[in-house]
Image (cartoon, rainbow, N blue to C red; front, top):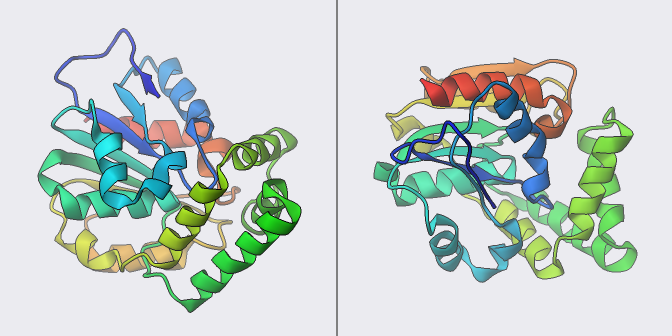
Length: 242
């Protein structure tokens, strides 16, 4: 999906948005709407998480097609893992990075066990059951509309993509060395009610890279782009428009 507006300048960096597991462009629709209410019309491209089963090299080739030479990245959850992956691959192309609800730790046995358990639920009960379990753990106070969006995105996720995303999450590398070496602007946004990517994970990033900007959002869970899009739009809009 690519969205442009009246304020688009041909030489402006592509704003590449990377969704999380079980997500598609709907995770960022409230954010884009909020940017537009601020009269901000970036050249937005949202990566296709349904194609993650292609493998890393083929997936990145497809996602970067049509992007400008310079890119601004916004990665949500697993999208943050992919953002760091691109920071390793082509650091010269990236201007600014915002990591939203991001866990910098390497994948471990616990993550692998969680992925296997979710895959079992998926096969036995269906994707909606996986979505419901994720919501109850990560954003239990989310409203009905948000829950419906998350369920719908999960239902529309191909099984092969869901398995690839779980495996990617479980096998991810430690992001801290990459972030520590990163010499361009970096913004981290977390939720106080996020059990997966809360303050303890964000402090790790702060220690690795003390000059990182950090916004902690109160009263919300893991699904920040759906739960508080206006707050996210204010922070990321100001960050990318500098």
